[in-house]
Length: 561
Image 1 (cartoon, rainbow, N blue to C red):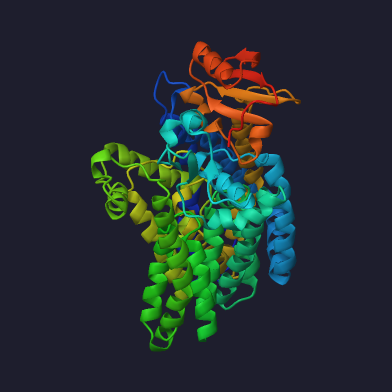
Image 2 (image 1 turned 90 degrees about the vertical axis):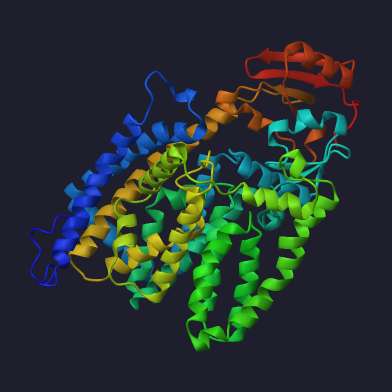
């Protein structure tokens, strides 16, 4: 990364060499500072499991990840043949983007099983999978016995992650149903874990193509694709059940279509945008689409695309974006707000929206500062600097960067940390500009910038397995908190509520599972025993430990759906 030894063509009178030298120094400084910030951010006397999950992952997983990234950067600076191999790989991906994306899909699919273990870790992931399996079973909502609802859906999650009706026992994800609808065909075949790898592989191709368009150079394609793969923010989320990888890909496809002339592409862009709007909640796509809309308005020819774009949005906006929450309200499935304010559908959602903004206090400013560090740690070194400090940008880069900055500005006022998550997940939907700008940067010359890109992308590629191992261990720890269930028979599982380990998240009941196993939130051993024998006098407890208890039920015990 040093500019020493480069000839005058690489560090000319325009000062590019000095700017690159400054970028290199700042990149090294941030890479060295990251583990120090993570380590000294810990509170004296507190252990790993004394922290809430946001800080636990930050101070422990991200500390190790930042050290891995720093070590990998040192290796790349010392070993020139690896940098040459990175450049060769970028060239191959430029020539074969479709083949590269297919290979990446296969790798992502394999790693989804190994790293993620087919297990949605966070509630944000579980409720998406739950809703997908509900749709795959031919239903709109899940159904549980009303008298057992508070045991089968922990009260702390009701109205926040899962909508419930205590009279009917019905339950549904609080989020819009776009991702579950896409996932449902995969769920029908038991392959839900394949969707995000597929969407991320498509997104990778779009990142490369947009970089090529932004630079006017085909070689930028491979560098941008490689930049995405060198960032654990992209690769680890591609293995997850979160909505963000899909929203990112749909956002890119939306913009890619709008770069094409004609009303058909604009109409199709609106259709794609409407899917992105209902994947999780409408805000991530809306924040991305606002700068795109301004870009369309700034040119007379582009303004002609606005009408077909709006027509493309209209059907799903009416049916799902507005229709789905109205349907849930009619079914008595409500979001959680203070009781005195929940007087109707409009008032209820207005109150919910007001809860998404807060004037930052010291705690929230601390959260936002650490979120920035997470963003840095989960990217290849220096890439965020390249994205923010680039002096020359194409329209593509300007629009995409505006989407990223607008998203960060919005979530700066969001009054909660992200909890679980890999990297800074709140900005993931607009993250691709980082990889695209890296691709443009790498082909701006054939000297110092290419060497810089080879070094930092190689560091990201070398460090990514460490991030995947940390993710795998985090998920395995959660899986291990589940009581061991007998291979045969019908089981009733009471899961102890150990808040430091987030075990309430493990109370998961999918459609059709009740014939084999029912999971409930444990209370105390005596109360659990009374409930088990109330369900069936013939219930027998077969295990009990700190994780909870398991009871065997006779097959003639009543239904739980």
